[in-house]
Length: 352
Image (cartoon, rainbow, N blue to C red; front, side, top):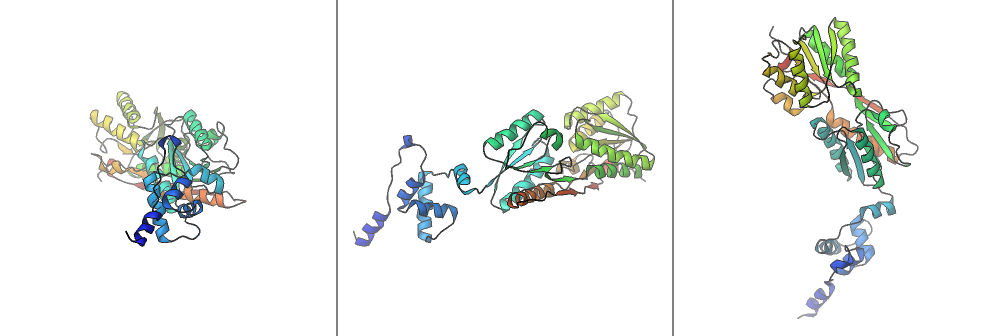
């Protein structure tokens, strides 16, 4: 064997890691790669000076040893937070999933990881999830509350030093927030129904949810201006089943409305199903409008007119606000309100 080959073998150290000794650390990686612990740290953090050959050796040792960096220890040492917490009411609802995508995509642009949690539309679970996140040192948070920021802050106190952005119009003045204009969205719906000839409109939504109350307020204003009657028809939830139950109840009562507005598209899907089962023609006998403009809404047997929210923009803007808040001291809290738009489809397209 040549001297050069012997030196090559000597540089390539083989380290046996005892599986009972716990996970491999920086020293194990350094020994396997034949470099110093400082060099391994430089490679991991892309700092300092090291050659391309050194980087390759370190990364190969990391793969062979199964080394995983202790991210919590790194963040405590460097004060550089790289994990964002996102809490939404229900990921089964495509609206929240799309909004979460806006947060995740913008975070990826900054090399950040988003931990997404789901409160299952439950206020107690919501508060518990936030306490769990902050206990894990995840205290850069984007939160879309179940029943509004004010109600949430009565049950949960953010820890000192936490950075928090709400996707909610109800956020207090000392918090950053971004939201869609729900009052304007409600007005859009009633203006459209009035223009299409509706005179008796039912509003299907749970009264306990703040955004549905805001939308109803906007609808009331537009209904009064157009001379249209508007009545709240309570639902138990904002899902397909709730829409179907409400629809069957309306049919049993004789369907006294010629226009129906639903809390979201999921309720609208259930409503359309029950109306079809009852032999009611949409839009011939009754006009139906949803909210959120989910992708499936355009593909229904009767495509659903809906209010489109700036879903991705809500998420990406919330992440931008969070990064601004954690990088600026003192910080001026900001509020942004984005405008929705109505997308007309067959469910309100009465023939001339």
